[in-house]
Amino acid sequence: MSALKAAAPEVVTFGCRLNIVESEELAREARAAGEDDIVIVNTCAVTAESTRQARQRIRRLHRERPEACIIVTGCAATIAPQDFARIEGVTRVVGNADKRLAASSHSDWSAASAPRAITASEGTRGFLAVQNGCDHRCTFCVIPFGRGPSRSAPADSVIARARELVEAGKREIVLTGVDLTSYGADLGGRETLGTLARLLLKELPELARLRISSIDCIEADADLIDAIATEERLMPHLHLSLQSGDDLTLKRMKRRHSRADAIAFCKELRALRPDIVFGADFIVGFPTETEEMFLRTQELVEECGLTHLHVFPFSPRPQTPAARMPPVGGEIVKQRARQLRALGDATLTRHLAAQDGKTLRVLAERGGVARAEDFTLVRTPGAVAGEMIDICVTGHDGAALLTSLSPLAEKR
Image 1: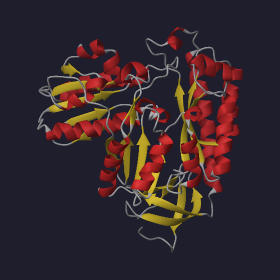
Image 2: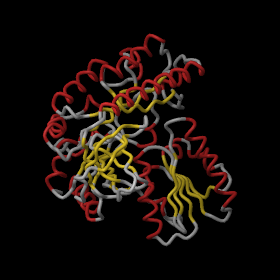
Image 3: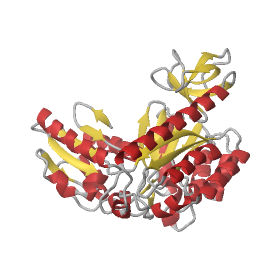
Image 4: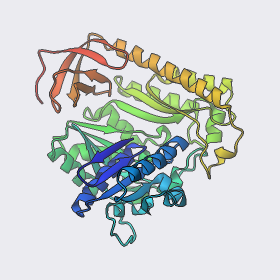
């Protein structure tokens, strides 16, 4: 959870990267509209805990700013608007379809505009949302109810917003969305995520780095795979939405890939781009998951050579089929989450140790840290944010690489 503050407005954000991008856009629009006492709470519905935290924060905001106009939007507000409307201090609840209009407390709430690319900044990195919504119906996921069907921003809109980020000094752009690999399916099939990545690199030769955020491996198109193999400025790091390493669990989740698909994808990409690093999302304690099923998830981490794990204990969400399936005991779910996170820590440590002695090109960020091309965190005390520098790896602290700045260090 994060908050974007000026004197006014205030935007409080829960949840995913796309929400953070949208929140920055909302803050810009609210300032342009001259709103002087407005708080926008951008909610998340992925887990029951994120929804609970949003309600709690709204109540606290009302106590702290009783005269402020509080507008609630986001996935949780879209799925259960009445729950938020009943909270004292809430002025209006706005669904995701009208999220842009949440920036004004005086809007007439007419229909939202067509999909468009939107941006957010994080130091030296820019985030570019190119897709929204999802056409799939995973049994654990409530997001399609909050985000609607998959919609893609036209390529010309994406290029224009990417150019704005580059002109503002961003050295790296990250493409993001709800179901990013479905990009272009609603545009007549002429464009895919791979063709979009290639187009951006062609149209913006001055862009140092382009990243792809979380993807569904089974939907990765041939152009994307070829671009990863051949485009040096397309960074060698992918975060995969895997969720489980057990085929029966994947079937019950209504995922579109199998265990074998995930292994084959990582093997193919690693053969094409040997320096590529993979992260992945996993849900532990999905209904009916046995110890044997969980063991297969642990084994998949090793078989795919995963480095960065995001582990989520299963959280039943209203309206989803998984909420009606036989649950796994709460303590067992917590224990499995601890085990998988410990495995993730071990694989990260192994990856960090393997970098010892290497010279890496990194992009310095604020706070004395930087990111290598494969997204590994690097401690770079004294480096100036925005500099592209070469560093020598001297060790690690379990979370990040340690360095001595190379004599080759230079601005790029």
